[in-house]
Image (tube, rainbow, N blue to C red):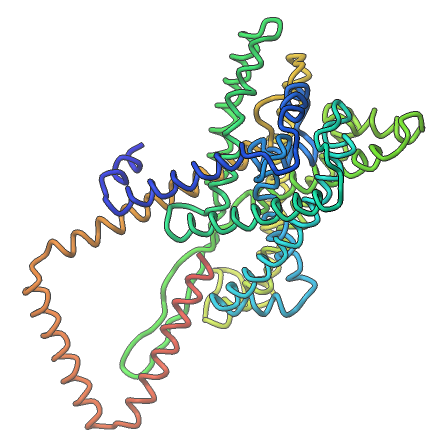
Length: 488
């Protein structure tokens, strides 16, 4: 709250907040604009019929990330899902395609190229996903065959127009998210996901009180949500800090290096990816079964054992996949050998551990222990909704799931952290401006003159030696800074 008040008092940050609110308003308005060719009245009846269905499947996940726009078949039906999928795919391809890994190591220019590839892949996935959504909506599979005729005109031309509209809207959302990142506060995609989740939260929460003993269940759900949110915030802020020391080196008449820092390792290095991957994979058999005959034995088995998130088979497979993807995704995003090589190159080492291979083995040992704790933590958060539904005998889905809580906590903490950093930056700049300009200018001129005189004397003594020392010093200073940044 203190950070928010300070941000509102600063004109620049206040303008950024207003810009973010404007983008959110446009995003929410687009969520209610129906796609051309859709019978909105029929869609509204379908959504009302499905209001109590569970969201622990792929369709529910896409609907969650689009703020309910998917089941309403609005122009923003895809939401940010194509961009999220494209980002994850590009990140995973770094392991398979050496070119992507090389671009990642090149820094800002390489990341810009990877971002460009992500945009192209986003548009391609948008075409594929929009086509799938339109076909499943036409056949009724999107709404679990509870309604039909949501698309009266099934001609190819009408279908093509709908695909183009949904794809173009996805590109527009991606552009809005980048604007929020550049001109606002926080990561644009994360902010839009946060708003999408919160848009249907209160409505789903309020539906609980209509059941038997509804107010008691309502209070229990609210209390559990607050406790879990506090717990998730605490765990997400926890770090295992590994100390890193940089050796001192005498270059010429100056000493460089000798700084101490630490390598921060989070308990949950994989973030929200494991439950998203697990839910997506487990939803594939259910989607396939919708195209089969309901009288067939394999279709009945899938619908009985994997059609609900409360079945034993679903819980067991869901848990195993979360553990697997926790270790797998962390191994992709954090490479101990790469970190150890960078530390060794710039003169860094972990006290008590030899540089090089021993450091990589030590980091791998620490990461395996953290991943074990992280997998248990994600399992606990992800299975809480299932336990509550069973314990309270709820007939409606919970307004939150494990994925929802992780996203809300992560995005909230990241946005507050950026707001606090920008507030302190503006306060520091205003403090410098408030100083006496003449005094600062005189002090700067004196320091410049002294620096020029000292450089002139050194050059007169031995110009060639001084140039070599200066070049070496600059290289060492840059290396130390880069290594410290990598460690942090």
